[in-house]
Amino acid sequence: IDAMFALRQAIEGFVVIFAHGSGDYLHGGEYRSRTSRENIEIEKFLTRDDLNAFSGKAVFCMSCNSNGLAQASIDAGAIAFVGFDMIPFNRFNDAGEPIGSHVLVKHCQEILIAPAITAALERFFTGRASLDEAVDYLRLWITKNAGDYVRHYTSVKERREVAALFLKVKEGVHYH
Image (cartoon, rainbow, N blue to C red; front, side):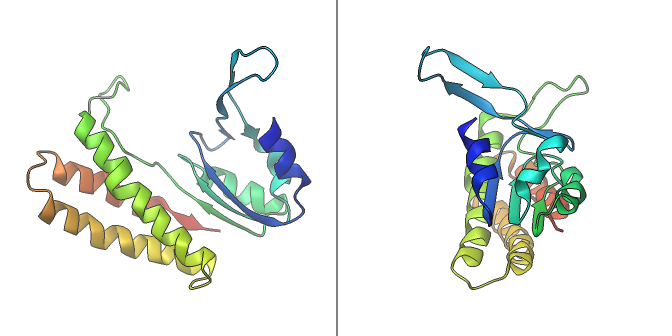
């Protein structure tokens, strides 16, 4: 609730979102109520009806299928939108149940995805790249480091699968 209020109050700025989502909404997560001390889950933090909150802002939305929100965000006044297709960090069976190992998930998230996003956003925030150039840099960073990961993490049985999932992120990141 506070985050949406702050987002709507800002006239301009750069919005960074890391959340689960779909092409129609972003999950809100869970927080503890200050008054009741209960844990409250916000199923949908932001839906298509709320995209006017991005008006006048550039948005970096690392959420599965956030590319589906890109054009509607631009139409609602966003200056730019960086979105993603799937952000795979696990493998799933035909029933949609996760079947990846802890190592696979941890390495995808912590060793590859997090440093890649950090490197790209750092280039943008320090003024060494425009936002679209930072996205190009992110793609380059992913390509280089996926290969390096396979060569250096020889003790990780799933290293090729980890690198393949990481390369899927590269294919799905787009600047709008």
